[in-house]
Length: 213
Image 1 (cartoon, rainbow, N blue to C red):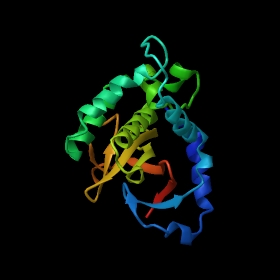
Image 2 (image 1 turned 180 degrees about the vertical axis):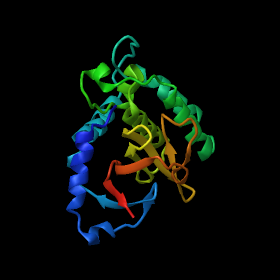
Image 3 (image 1 turned 180 degrees about the horizontal axis):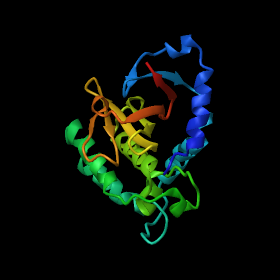
Image 4 (image 1 turned 90 degrees about the vertical axis):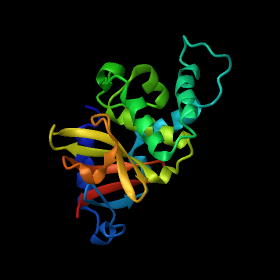
């Protein structure tokens, strides 16, 4: 599994110290849980590393050679995104979800020798990955198409069916929050999912703690 319980436990302990005023700062709900927006992304060094590495990897790197680790590995992805750029939003969401979900699921320990590693889209396209990697490439796909990053998040949840941590991507569309999940074939509303308890979510600008309403 990708997100270790140690990190989730730490964040739950942090949440205990939040004041009642902070909890009421933004009474939106995800999976029926109230969310409290925070701004200190330094709590997520792996996520910040993904953002930094992705910017570097998207820069031109000279002559293409598909045998080496360079921009060539991104060409198929960028070509795919270009091919769906004129579709309607619902079709783009469905196709991005399917594109990522067609990759093979591989644990971080097998790929990188680490219990928890957040991969950039480039690394995911080469090595495949686990659930947060699916969520990350989906988010970066929407960003590449020009979607507002503030409408998107990587969401860490507790899967009450599997009794383990999991990660999905959420996107705010048409007044609803849609969930893109490597464990669920269809893109569906968060209101239709009852076995996920959100712990925290994060995007390029902020992170949110999720607590029972």
